[in-house]
Image (cartoon, rainbow over all chains, first blue to last red; front, side):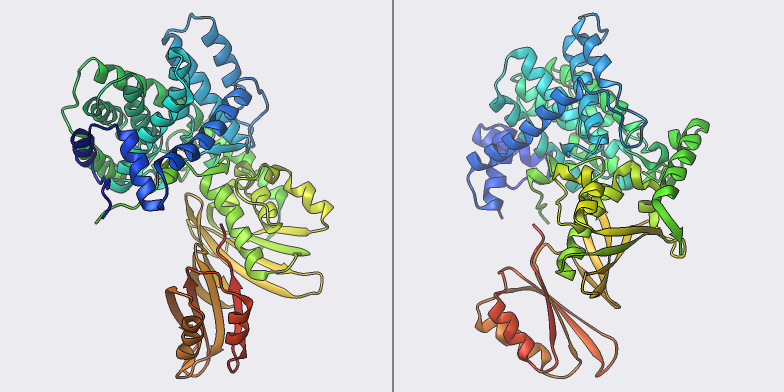
Length: 303
Length: 223
């Protein structure tokens, strides 16, 4: 057994409080133990991921190129322009974070190189939140990397205790997990303590229990990209509540178990099969027929 | 029981979008098929099952597979240009869809031919998150992840076959991570699937091949 092994939020809190270290420190120390490397190497490897995230944002906020499926690709640029006017209802931080989340998910749908976080479908939430917060506060990259490590520790708890697969748990397991990860990391970046991070993650995940995975035509485009924007807003709300001193009545470990059970209870149609929700609407079905027709031109014949 | 997840399983992997299962996993399966065939592919018939066939171009599954058959990896942006690269390299391909097998799993079968008319078929499943299982080589059903170095030994089902192979590996200081046996029937053709931590040097492979009636495929772990 490793010195920094954590299998629950309770473990994370115990290790953090005993050693007076952050979740980021624990995540890096544990990774270093299991990979037989140094915490500083883990940090540098995470810096590579941050580089990819920043490239995605830079390209995504200006590109208007359509996605592979052709359903998105024109949303991040106008959202970014709008965020810069300072008039956004959701404020400077959230409107920018939404623009960034759209940018990254649109780049993903254009077949660009991205960092799954925790999945490709939910890859906009955590970097959108953390990078826009760092820009607002003038933080350096090391602060964002610590945030990514904190987020990863929460992601590990959710993966181990429930699932991060839309096919197993619906969107609550993808954007929901990402939102909880981002909420916890933003609290740490703002100087909140470990308990506040855990409350933020718990509140963020609670808020999206039951969220279905209903990709139109089975593509990671609609409603996935805009659900990432919701993940951003939900993370910001949860982080703000935690920083204000509000606590989650239900502890994070129990919320994760609840998410797992809700995922099991969700019908097959609402778990990435493209048979329910948005995918089963009149418009969703019409898009699916177009996608099928285009595929038939790639596939030569049928056995 | 303790979890053994890496922070890079969560914030990561770095991959070409949009889908870890339909893009990265599809590419990795094609990388695996190429590694198992171990020849430049002149032509491939690619049969898609399950949702691979239904979402195809929208997840770039076609490009990921074509690129993967040329050895391009799931995190390489060249994947998007794979059809043009295939044309330059004179690799031809044909996509087929199967409606004879009903499955919700993302399965693909590659029937590959080299310019010398050598042929091999490989089938596998994309199991999510970019992970794969190869479950058929030729007519042989098996289960390999290619997360380890893998040796597939094709031999006759007789006493002592395992001993012969494992002795060679032990003598050469190679640790066996896992070992599985499959056979068509008693005293019929059989397969040993051995996953190892260490690389297998050509000398060791030659020693195994020199055992009576054993043919060996060696697949280094993917990456």
